[in-house]
Amino acid sequence: MTLTTDPVALDAWYAVATASEVTHRPDRTRLLGQDIAIDRCRDTGAIRVRPVLHGGEYGDPLPVIERYACVFTTFGNPDTPIVEIEEAGEPDRRVVPCGWFTIRSSGPRIVENFLDMAHFPYVHTDILGSEPNTDVGPYRAEIRADVDEVWATGCHFWQPRGAATERDGSGMMMHIDYRVPSPFIVMLYRVAPSAPDRRDAIALFIQPMGEELCRAQPVEFLVDEISTHTELLHFEQVIFLQDRLILENQVPRRLPLDGQAEIPTRADTASVAYRRWLAAKGLGYGTILPHGQGERA
Amino acid sequence: MTVLPELYEFPLDDECYKVRLALSLMGVASRSRPVDMVPGREHEKPAFLRINPLGTLPVWVDGPVILREAATIVLACARGLKAGNWLPADPAAFGAVMDWLVFSVRDLHAAHQARDCALLGQEEPSPALRAQVRRAFNVMEDHMVLRHIGGHEWFADATPTIADILLFPAFALCRDYGVDHDGFPALRRWMRAMRTLPGFITMPGIPDVT
Ligand SMILES: [Fe+2]
Image (cartoon, rainbow over all chains, first blue to last red; front, side, top):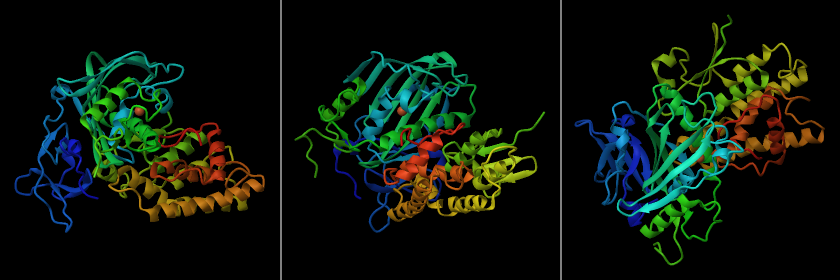
């Protein structure tokens, strides 16, 4: 495989590793079709991300930024910085990188799944939803032109066990805001169940290896004085693997951006806004653009 | 006060699921000790290696007894049951159970490898590995077709045994690594029967409808 030529995909920041896991021994992975190696320089200790060229030698180092427990890099010239997550800097926040998992799907499909509340009772039964509480109430989805992000606000959903702290399963109405700050990063904010005056933040960082094969890592920024680290991990990982099964069954794996391409009931308001936003950007990587737009080489 | 046996486990691991499923179906009480296998690699750290120097999961700790292979944990638990037929005494049925037990460890190891690669790897599982899994499933499918013709719905006996439990995760979770259930109608029928057993529990990656 070779590096994509899609300019929108190239000009974005991607998390490609967990910073604490990077060693002197180069780890191989792939981003946008290009093999890359990630290691820590023996002299300076700095993390390096380098493309692996055809002969196996390394190309010039790519830009590297360590943030949110992850290593971010880019092939292009992003005109927006890495997403600003204010909560991450609070001293009592627990920052939990939940591990990288591989998914045979496209990045945009993974984002869309994250934005979808309707599947909670059926896919995350007795955790994020349960019958008969299946209604997705009204909420507001918008493309915020000033910051170039997609937001869905005022979402609420009945969750039997919406967070690791909610052990008794009595359930609560969870208030959620969704945010897409970059085509391959999706987040949610929810009222922290054990500290109702504050919000938890959960980000999903997607590393598109190819158009239809990704790795992704959920990173949580939580206010939680109760759960053990392992409990937080396993709670999130179970949810993630439930989504993975659904995602791998979706056909086509790339996300159609033509409004007519899929039955409208599946594409709810947030998903419609996300698809419109991607179509306006002309992202062709991991998507199927409307006819005549962004003909690909 | 009785001290419960402890199961060191990772919820997303198929080998650990074999044990969890067996304990639940057989009604054996235990205490779960969750291990941060991914991403923390806790199973490779000194504290865990003191319990199991092999650095593998699951591990069963029952007083002085430490077992570290899903099949032997399930076997030992079934042997300790006061009632139930999960491990038949009849030599023919017992032999069949043990034969499938070895099959689950040896021939279905490819399924574990394929799932590990699909979940955590940099590439999709190789076609050769997936073909190896399909060959093992074909052996199971052919066996269950014949069992069905003979009027039986379970692998080794007239009632479910630990053979059924130990074979179940590899097939139930095969969507995780891109092998579809469609080509195995007898195994799908068996999978539906497994779901109806009292105490059956599922895990992420197993489709609700087969
Ligand atoms: Fe989900």
